[in-house]
Amino acid sequence: MSENHLRWIPARVEEINEIAEQTKQFRLFLPSFTRFEVLPPNAYIEIKTASGMARQVPIVTHHLTKQEIMIEVALKDAEDVALRDFYDNTALEQIIELTAPFSVEDRDDGIDFYVKFVRQGITLAIPKEVSITDIMREHGLKVNTSCEYGICGTCYAEVLKGEILHKDTYLMDDEKAKQDCMMICVSRGIPGSTIELDL
Image 1 (spheres, rainbow, N blue to C red):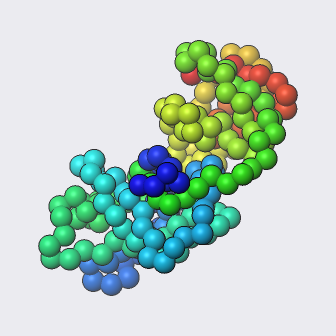
Image 2: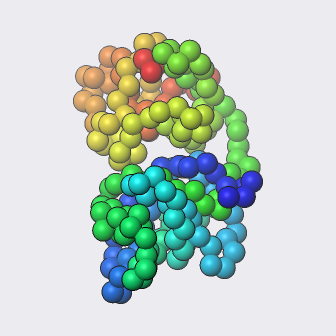
Image 3: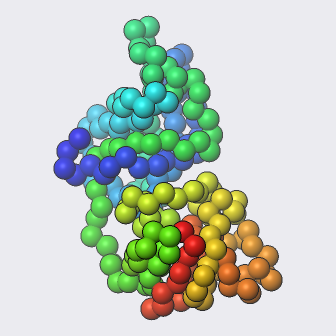
């Protein structure tokens, strides 16, 4: 892994296609902080299998604006058990871990608002166009997410202080009006403010 690689990051399985005997393509969605470099021919990613071992698989295509990549897993008679397990048991919407030759491009780091994580005792700046959950991942904080669109409710967090700009479709209007909870994958604080979360 070169110095330009990201650490292990989560990716959601969006599509699975069997394109040939013993060969599947997996379309993966990556967090919004992931940016692509110009990939060399025959670029690979490393996937973490259920056994915790890393295995290389080729990148077939990547999408510059949607944080999507297509990978191809081809099995041979001599393929190891760990990769076979990934091939057989990976499912749609599953979250897997990977690392690859991605880079974090220069971005507008203009700070939008701040989040104080009360249990952690830290405050992080949230740039414009970047979610709270992605900043948490960048700083190695545990975060539970699933859809990342504000639909499923997995990333529900209690708000201890601050005014929230709700952008989810999970909470009812009366719940949003109370300003005591939020979906941290999409919702935000008022620009320039600091919100406090029970996390």
